[in-house]
Length: 146
Image (cartoon, rainbow, N blue to C red; front, top):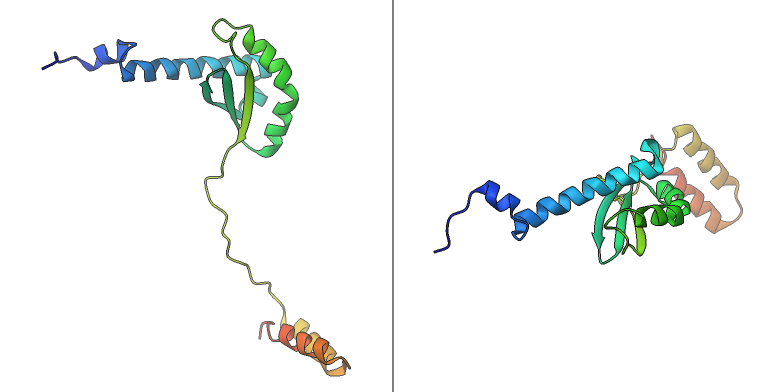
């Protein structure tokens, strides 16, 4: 039976999964800090470090407009990040757009039509000499409130 270890020992051990998680978290905080210093706090608040693996840094943008803005900054950002100790092997920055917290509903919204508008359509149907248009106007008029 392996010896029992305290939680603090596990967290300090760089070879344990917990220690690696702590180290990764520290690296992400450090990268976020570098991002703020390069882009400025107003702009960098719209981006988060999502991952860094095999020389690819993945940033998550709040919206597509912020992603587009950051794409213009990528060459400068990549050069500045590469100058930081431990990031010389950085070869690419990818940008992802954050998914909205609330999914959009696919249900169709029914347009509202006043009773007066429905009456106008019904009257137009009565005087129209074209049968297909007459039928379409009547179907549309039936969708009015009333």
